[in-house]
Image 1 (cartoon, rainbow, N blue to C red):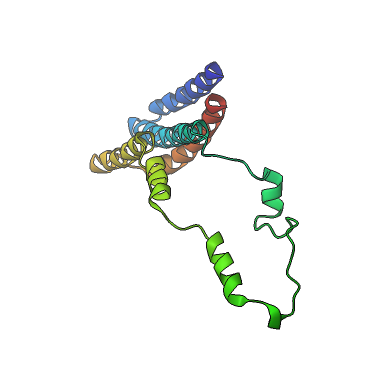
Image 2: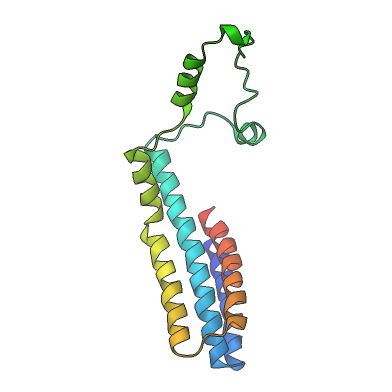
Length: 169
């Protein structure tokens, strides 16, 4: 798997190096944009994989419904629970409201900590820092050419997706 991922990366890098023969300005744009997007995708995939493994290892994750059931019935409308068909006069609305409020997830410190831990990972922050600093460096040195830069971002996203699927599988 890793050999295939490395070969994909090397082949794309050879194509990128070919842009050096067009101009050094084109090469600088293509390489900076490609590596930025590639590192962002790889970093996010790796950080997500680590977060999922940690959650599974801690025993915090419990699968209660299968994926197909969640897709077909995301709000559990057809889960077989008994529906109260009593006339409106006999319903205790206060009790129903209390039950529904209890179902709503409250934002607590544990959930906030988990969200911050996943989004503040160095595997996510460093590639974004590389993207920002690379863009600024190209702009300040009058090398930025969006005709090369933007398609290279797309190429980095595509390549990063393929490589992350190979490595993270």
